[in-house]
Amino acid sequence: MLAFKSGDARAFSTLVQRHRGPVYNFILRYVGHRQRAEDLLQETWLKVVRSSGEWQPKAKFTTWVYTIARNLCVDSARKETFRKTDSLDAPASQDEAEGRSVGDLVADEAGQTPDRAAHNVRLRPLIEQALQALPSEQREVFLLREYQGIGFKEIAEVTGVNENTVKSRMRYALEGLRKRLEELGVDGELIAAEGRTVA
Image (cartoon, rainbow, N blue to C red; front, side):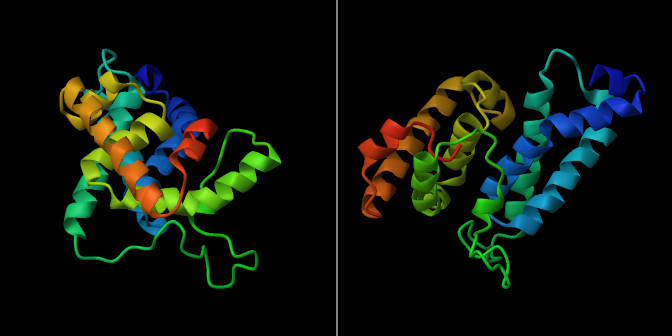
């Protein structure tokens, strides 16, 4: 980011290449609609370019870019409060031969065993459904922590609340997910044994 701020255009390409996938996954899971997520991702990178002069090295680039993405997601949600969005377990396209869902198209960068992959295919739609049922402030903390691996201190910077509030929201998110998944017939211990199931 320092190189880009100093005028090296190639550095921007490196930033996009390094952070595009994780930021897109965060936005997609936040808004739950593929086209909207792609639009917000573009807006995020435009904001990075336009605001590059304001970035200070005291803040991690990841904290800054997730703050931008999160703010755009919140603004978008406010603008489209009454708009119905597609679920991540909705069909990816009408002519999708394999019956894959939008959630299946989100890249999973970790290599998986066939058993783990099969387990994830069964659980992913249920977890995404449970995530969408969470209040937005709990969902965003959960997504940043579990899907993006960001620490509580950085999440506090991204969301603009104190670290204890972030931890509290995470606890409530976990409790809410466990309860909702139990309602959907998923054994909470099975998920705990698997670790971060769909991360």
